[in-house]
Amino acid sequence: MAAQNDAVLKIEGLTKSFQNVHVLMNIDLAIEEGAFLVLVGPSGCGKSTLLNCVAGLEAPTSGRILIGGRDMTDAAPKDRDIAMVFQSYALYPNMSVARNITFGMKVRGATRAEQRSALEKVAHMLKIDHLLNRRPAHLSGGQRQRVAMGRALVRQPKLFLFDEPLSNLDAKLRVEMRAEIKRLHRALGATIVYVTHDQTEAMSLATEVAVMEGGVIAQLGPPQQVYDYPVNTFVAGFIGSPAMNFINGRISKDGGAIRIQVSFDGATRELPADHYPFGGGIEDGAEVILGIRPEYVSGSDPSADRPNVALDLVPTLVETNGFDQHVNLAFGDSEISGRFSPREQIKLGTPVRTRIDLSQISVFDRETRQRL
Ligand SMILES: Nc1ncnc2c1ncn2[C@@H]1O[C@H](COP(=O)(O)OP(=O)(O)O)[C@@H](O)[C@H]1O
Ligand SMILES: [Mg+2]
Image (cartoon, rainbow, N blue to C red; front, side, top):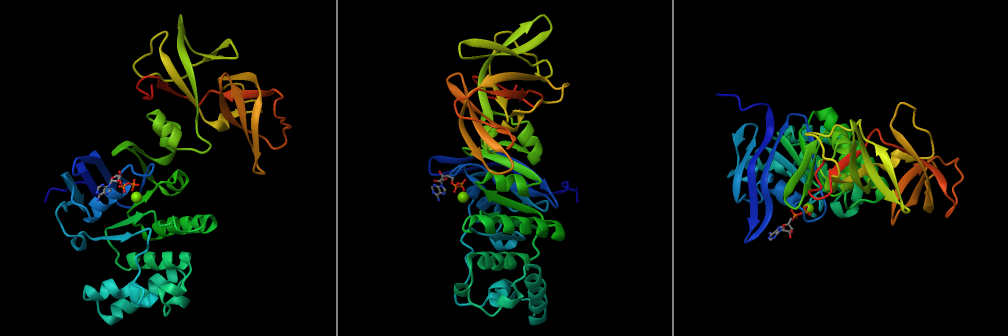
C-alpha cells in the first residue's frame, strides 16, 4: 500500500452548503500525529460545521476527508476512530459517572475487566476517582467537563475532536482546564482538533492554529508565526489582545531608502522601513496599512540597533493590571494602544514620550488588506 503520508487527518477541497448558503469554501488541511490543531474564528465562521464534517455528523457537499490515510468521507461516525467532546458535555443524566465513561466501551463489546481497567486509568488521570458513583446532576460544571473528557479518553481514538469544551466554565476554571488539556495532550501524544472562538485559548493550546473567516481558512500555522506574520488585516486584528494597531500610511521611496509616511496632527513623519522584507518590491506612493503590536509601543527605549521612532502622544485612556499599564494614545484622528511600565507616571491629557519599535511591523496593502 502506498503510504499516503503521515497525516492523521487530511481534508481536501471540502465545501459545505446548507441549501444555498455556502458555509465552508474549499477547505484544505492536513495534520500529523501528535498535532494540536485549533480552529479559531468569530462566531458563525464555520468552525463547528467543519468539525462536524470530520466527525461524520454533517455530510460535506463536496471534497474528501481522510483519517489515518483512509477515505472516511461517507463513513458512519462510529467507524471513523474518533472521539468528540461537546460544549454541552451530553452526559447521560441517569447513569453514574463510571457508566457514563464506560458505556461506549460496553456497547462496542469490551469485557468488564477491560472497562474497569480503562476507567481506573482515566479517572486517575482526570482526578475524578472519588466521583465515580455520582450522577451528573450532582457534579459541578468543571467536574462534568472532566467526565465528558473521560468518556473520550477511554476510547483511545486516532483523533480527538473538541468543540468549545470550556465555554460553560467560569474564567478561572477555564484557565485551569486549559492547562490540564495541554498536559493530557502531551502525556497521551494524542492528535486533537479543537474549536474555540477565543484567540487566547487558541494561542495557548495549539501547535497549529487555523484562523477562519467566513467559511475559509485565512491562515494556518504555528501560533507564533500567525502572531508575527499575519497574512491579512483580519488575522492581524483577530489574534492578539489588545489588538494590533493599524495606521494608514504611504510608501515613500527615495533613492534606495524605503520609508512609510504617516500623518498625524497635521504633520507627516517618515518611518524607516528598509528592514521590512517587501515581497516582490513595493511602489513609491503605495497606500498601505502599518500594523504595530501594542507591546512595541512603550515608554522605554528600544535597543539602539532596532529601527524606531519617538513621538510625543497624548494619553486618552489608562488601564493598569499591576504588571503593566495599557495606554491609549491619540494619533491623528484615531488612537493607538501601547504598554507602559507601571513605574511610569502617565496622566490623561499630558503628552508622554512614546517609543515605537518598528523591528516587528506588519505592512498590508490598503486595498486588498493582504500582507505585503
Ligand atoms: N443545519 C444548518 N442549516 C443551515 N445553516 C446552518 C446549519 N448549521 C450551521 N449553519 C450556518 O452555518 C454558519 C456556520 O455555523 P457554525 O459552523 O456553527 O459556526 P461557528 O461554529 O464558527 O460559530 C452559520 O451561519 C450558521 O447559521
Ligand atoms: Mg460553533
